[in-house]
Structure formats: structure tokens, C-alpha cells
Length: 145
Image (cartoon, rainbow, N blue to C red; front, side):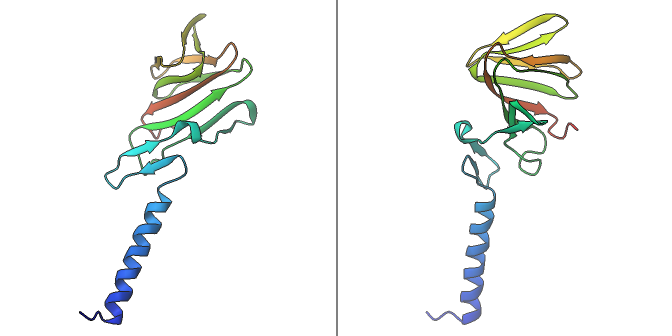
């Protein structure tokens, strides 16, 4: 069966377009399936300084286009880091490494690897660690700013 030049060119263009779209939605640490399911390899996410600090690092791992209702990222606190924050969203923190402490009203809620902390919207807290903490955060709504 002979394909016309136009049909063949159209087929190649469609394959190239689909490949480029797939590559654009997949990074070294993330795979976005056409269904919308996203797989993230947390150990491969490169973190960047938060607000110019070298002891607090983070990276959002999903975009609003990928996940318009829930946000997700990874944060790392080094060398006993602490910072104050008021949440304008609900947040779950899932500890990967170290010890995460959330101080509120003079009390501390802490979590170790494999443990989860929930922080309700409107909480005025200090994120802190006695030594080191790396955790996944999920926020709702995703567009919290």
C-alpha cells in the first residue's frame, strides 16, 4: 500500500508532537501518565533554597496544570532550621528522613520517618527540626497564594 507524501508527513508530525508532549510532562523524577496519574521519585528531586536560605530547601513537584486541586512538594530542613509560617491552606506533611517538629502555641507535634502530621488552614506555626528533616507536603487547595 502506497502512502501519499502528505499522509506520511502528517503521521510523522503527529508522532513527533506526541513524543514532545510526553517528554515535556516527564522529568527525571516525574512521570505523567496520559490518564493524569503522576509518579514521583522523591529521592531524585533537586531542592532549591527557600526564601534565600541555605538551611531550608524545597521543590514543588506538581504544577497547577497537572494537579489543579492539590499541591505537592518536598521540603528539607537542615542543621536545626526553623521558620515561622501561617497556613492559608490545609497541609499534610509525610516525613521521609529525620524528625519534623511543628510548634504551635508553645506545644510541639513531632513526626519521624513514615509518620504524618496534618496542619489545618489558619494555623500559625514554626516548622522546625532538632537536626534534619526531609518531608513531602501536600496542600489543599493547590493554588493557595
